[in-house]
Image 1 (cartoon, rainbow, N blue to C red):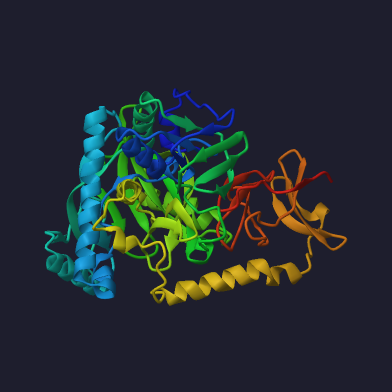
Image 2: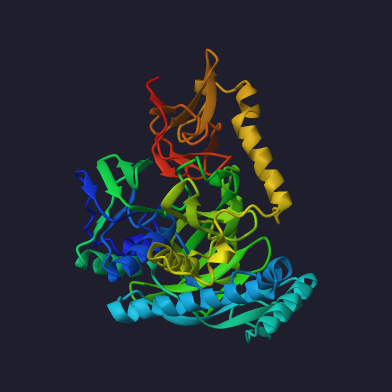
Length: 498
């Protein structure tokens, strides 16, 4: 699986790894859009910064749809009713500033990343959702934002209505990150790829970040690893869940639209355009489900393919990929100090699929934290917050999923044996009371792993779509051979020879 963004930077070869212990002022764990934006701003201020990532440029950023917008679904009515008018106004204001901040960086650093100003639309095809749109427009009007309601858009089907945010944007996120990378290293700062952070230890007033290639000692640590991999303190695994979604890149001879689009409720369809070999192409996303729920082709890629065939019969799929996003139970990111027990260590997570703007928001907040400046927006993203959970239904579902993964499924006996697993398939079998995760490749070669998540010990599920072992508790994912793909688990699975 590869994304159009990764292939667009295939000539980038500066993938250096940490090769010895080193000291720095600030260590940032994660080289996605949040980690590198944070490093960029701190480098501009003269700080000595080291960034590490277990792969390249962050897993989530490499597979995003890359819409830069402050319109995060039908969301402002929720903020207005849940937290008040000033809160909703500040949330919109800080995300609008983030759009301008990104443009300013692109202009200053002369980054060629297909940046385009675009209008963004949230639409509905359902008449019974129009009241939700009226409520959203009322909230936006109270905030003082001039969003508009339309009943026609440029997509090739009829709608009941849509809310438009003007002057939003889209870009190629990895070309943008290459630009940030070049600026960061030009100031003698470091970005290390293929460097896995396994732990963070506090010693006096400094931190030691343990990696597979050495230790980094620093005064400050920023956890920019998508999902916090440090379990205690913080307990972020109890406040977040992960959602998997899918994207197709499509070539078509049909005329394509301008603008970015997403509908309000399931089944979700997200539309935008991009450039591939100097040709305008379509990106369509959707198929969302909680990570760890066993997906099938018809409800993921197949579901998107069917929609594309209806809208653009001459379409040709040139890329397909999926990604994971962290979502908090009250729909707001956690941005701030990691724990009161860990001074000078910071966390940003739970961007709920809108990380292009929220990553810039987080980076600017952290600059102020490190400088000791007050930031008027920090209160919205309080990383210590313990308010009553707004999304009680999702909280209940998460507890059920976790308890099943941790306890109940381990009591079940497997009815599968090795001989019943076909080539190209995987499943869990039981031998002498011990569970094994088995995958047979197309040639019948067997890969055996211990199907227990390296994060908190949940029993993993076989994902036949991607040939991965997925955790139903907190969303860790592992390749068929046990190699870790997504956190919060950082260690590979134990493997066996059968």
